[in-house]
Image (tube, rainbow, N blue to C red; front, top):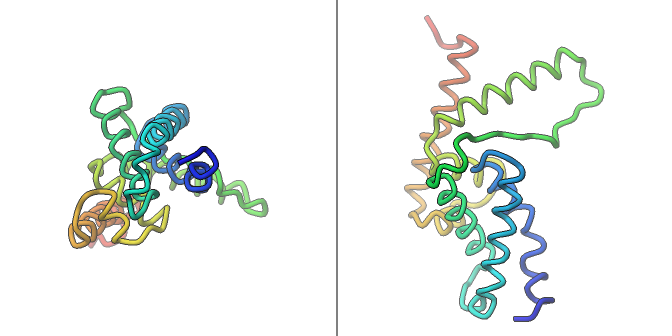
Length: 169
Protein backbone atom coordinates (compact mmCIF):
# COMPACT_ATOMS: atom_id res chain seq x y z
CA UNK A 1 0.00 0.00 0.00
CA UNK A 2 1.42 3.36 -0.96
CA UNK A 3 1.02 6.67 0.84
CA UNK A 4 -1.85 7.82 -1.41
CA UNK A 5 -3.90 4.66 -0.78
CA UNK A 6 -3.20 4.88 2.94
CA UNK A 7 -4.34 8.50 3.13
CA UNK A 8 -7.43 7.75 1.07
CA UNK A 9 -8.52 5.19 3.65
CA UNK A 10 -7.45 6.80 6.92
CA UNK A 11 -7.61 10.56 6.35
CA UNK A 12 -11.45 10.58 6.43
CA UNK A 13 -11.57 8.66 9.72
CA UNK A 14 -8.76 10.47 11.51
CA UNK A 15 -11.24 12.74 13.31
CA UNK A 16 -13.28 9.72 14.41
CA UNK A 17 -10.15 8.15 15.89
CA UNK A 18 -9.38 11.42 17.68
CA UNK A 19 -12.91 11.72 19.11
CA UNK A 20 -12.78 8.16 20.47
CA UNK A 21 -9.38 8.88 22.01
CA UNK A 22 -10.67 12.11 23.51
CA UNK A 23 -13.59 10.31 25.17
CA UNK A 24 -11.30 7.74 26.72
CA UNK A 25 -8.33 9.91 27.70
CA UNK A 26 -7.93 12.97 29.89
CA UNK A 27 -6.84 15.71 27.57
CA UNK A 28 -6.76 16.90 24.02
CA UNK A 29 -3.01 16.48 24.00
CA UNK A 30 -3.28 12.86 25.09
CA UNK A 31 -5.95 12.24 22.44
CA UNK A 32 -3.81 13.87 19.75
CA UNK A 33 -0.84 11.75 20.81
CA UNK A 34 -2.97 8.61 20.77
CA UNK A 35 -4.29 9.39 17.30
CA UNK A 36 -0.78 9.94 15.99
CA UNK A 37 0.46 6.73 17.59
CA UNK A 38 -2.41 4.76 16.07
CA UNK A 39 -1.79 6.24 12.62
CA UNK A 40 1.89 5.37 12.96
CA UNK A 41 1.02 1.79 13.92
CA UNK A 42 -1.33 1.56 10.96
CA UNK A 43 1.37 2.88 8.64
CA UNK A 44 3.83 0.31 9.97
CA UNK A 45 1.24 -2.40 9.22
CA UNK A 46 0.19 -0.96 5.85
CA UNK A 47 1.05 -4.11 3.91
CA UNK A 48 -1.29 -6.21 6.08
CA UNK A 49 -4.25 -3.80 5.95
CA UNK A 50 -5.59 -5.40 2.78
CA UNK A 51 -6.33 -8.54 4.78
CA UNK A 52 -9.04 -6.76 6.80
CA UNK A 53 -12.64 -6.40 5.63
CA UNK A 54 -12.96 -3.05 7.38
CA UNK A 55 -9.76 -1.05 7.88
CA UNK A 56 -11.87 1.52 9.76
CA UNK A 57 -13.02 -1.04 12.33
CA UNK A 58 -9.43 -2.24 12.65
CA UNK A 59 -8.25 1.33 13.24
CA UNK A 60 -10.96 1.91 15.85
CA UNK A 61 -9.97 -1.32 17.61
CA UNK A 62 -6.33 -0.26 17.70
CA UNK A 63 -7.37 3.16 19.03
CA UNK A 64 -9.53 1.66 21.76
CA UNK A 65 -6.80 -0.76 22.82
CA UNK A 66 -4.10 1.92 22.79
CA UNK A 67 -6.22 4.26 24.93
CA UNK A 68 -7.13 1.51 27.38
CA UNK A 69 -3.44 0.63 27.66
CA UNK A 70 -2.66 4.28 28.42
CA UNK A 71 -5.34 4.32 31.10
CA UNK A 72 -3.95 1.14 32.63
CA UNK A 73 -0.51 2.72 32.74
CA UNK A 74 -2.01 5.43 34.94
CA UNK A 75 -1.08 8.25 32.60
CA UNK A 76 -4.70 9.32 32.35
CA UNK A 77 -7.00 9.11 35.35
CA UNK A 78 -10.09 11.06 34.37
CA UNK A 79 -12.53 11.20 31.53
CA UNK A 80 -13.46 14.59 30.18
CA UNK A 81 -16.35 15.30 27.93
CA UNK A 82 -15.47 18.24 25.76
CA UNK A 83 -18.23 19.47 23.58
CA UNK A 84 -16.90 22.43 21.64
CA UNK A 85 -19.29 22.07 18.75
CA UNK A 86 -22.26 23.26 20.77
CA UNK A 87 -22.79 26.95 20.32
CA UNK A 88 -26.16 28.53 20.27
CA UNK A 89 -25.60 32.17 19.51
CA UNK A 90 -29.12 33.28 20.31
CA UNK A 91 -29.27 31.48 23.65
CA UNK A 92 -29.37 33.56 26.75
CA UNK A 93 -26.50 33.55 29.20
CA UNK A 94 -28.68 31.61 31.64
CA UNK A 95 -29.37 28.93 29.06
CA UNK A 96 -25.65 28.69 28.23
CA UNK A 97 -24.83 28.27 31.92
CA UNK A 98 -27.47 25.57 32.28
CA UNK A 99 -26.09 23.68 29.29
CA UNK A 100 -22.53 24.00 30.62
CA UNK A 101 -23.72 22.72 34.00
CA UNK A 102 -25.40 19.72 32.35
CA UNK A 103 -22.25 18.84 30.38
CA UNK A 104 -20.22 19.03 33.57
CA UNK A 105 -22.74 16.80 35.33
CA UNK A 106 -22.67 14.28 32.50
CA UNK A 107 -18.87 14.32 32.69
CA UNK A 108 -19.08 13.39 36.36
CA UNK A 109 -21.60 10.64 35.60
CA UNK A 110 -19.44 9.29 32.77
CA UNK A 111 -16.54 8.91 35.21
CA UNK A 112 -18.62 6.32 37.06
CA UNK A 113 -18.99 4.15 33.96
CA UNK A 114 -16.46 1.43 33.37
CA UNK A 115 -14.07 1.77 30.41
CA UNK A 116 -16.11 -0.60 28.27
CA UNK A 117 -19.34 1.33 28.84
CA UNK A 118 -17.60 4.66 28.16
CA UNK A 119 -16.29 3.40 24.84
CA UNK A 120 -19.60 1.86 23.79
CA UNK A 121 -21.64 4.94 24.73
CA UNK A 122 -19.14 7.06 22.79
CA UNK A 123 -19.26 4.90 19.69
CA UNK A 124 -23.03 4.41 19.63
CA UNK A 125 -24.42 7.72 20.90
CA UNK A 126 -21.72 10.14 19.74
CA UNK A 127 -20.18 8.47 16.70
CA UNK A 128 -23.53 6.87 15.74
CA UNK A 129 -21.85 3.59 14.84
CA UNK A 130 -23.85 0.44 14.18
CA UNK A 131 -23.96 -2.36 16.75
CA UNK A 132 -22.09 -4.79 14.51
CA UNK A 133 -19.26 -2.27 14.05
CA UNK A 134 -19.00 -1.70 17.81
CA UNK A 135 -19.07 -5.45 18.41
CA UNK A 136 -16.19 -5.93 16.00
CA UNK A 137 -14.14 -3.12 17.53
CA UNK A 138 -14.80 -4.15 21.13
CA UNK A 139 -14.37 -7.85 20.30
CA UNK A 140 -17.77 -8.65 21.76
CA UNK A 141 -20.98 -10.06 20.36
CA UNK A 142 -23.80 -7.66 19.50
CA UNK A 143 -25.95 -8.78 22.42
CA UNK A 144 -23.16 -7.98 24.89
CA UNK A 145 -22.74 -4.56 23.26
CA UNK A 146 -26.47 -3.86 23.62
CA UNK A 147 -26.41 -4.95 27.27
CA UNK A 148 -23.36 -2.81 28.09
CA UNK A 149 -24.89 0.18 26.28
CA UNK A 150 -28.19 -0.28 28.09
CA UNK A 151 -26.48 -0.48 31.47
CA UNK A 152 -24.32 2.57 30.73
CA UNK A 153 -27.32 4.60 29.58
CA UNK A 154 -29.29 3.50 32.66
CA UNK A 155 -26.51 4.71 34.98
CA UNK A 156 -26.42 8.05 33.15
CA UNK A 157 -30.21 8.38 33.20
CA UNK A 158 -30.44 7.47 36.90
CA UNK A 159 -27.77 10.04 37.73
CA UNK A 160 -29.55 12.77 35.78
CA UNK A 161 -32.90 11.92 37.34
CA UNK A 162 -31.33 11.90 40.79
CA UNK A 163 -29.77 15.32 40.20
CA UNK A 164 -33.06 16.82 39.11
CA UNK A 165 -34.99 14.94 41.81
CA UNK A 166 -37.26 13.36 39.23
CA UNK A 167 -38.93 10.14 40.14
CA UNK A 168 -38.64 10.64 43.89
CA UNK A 169 -41.80 10.06 45.83
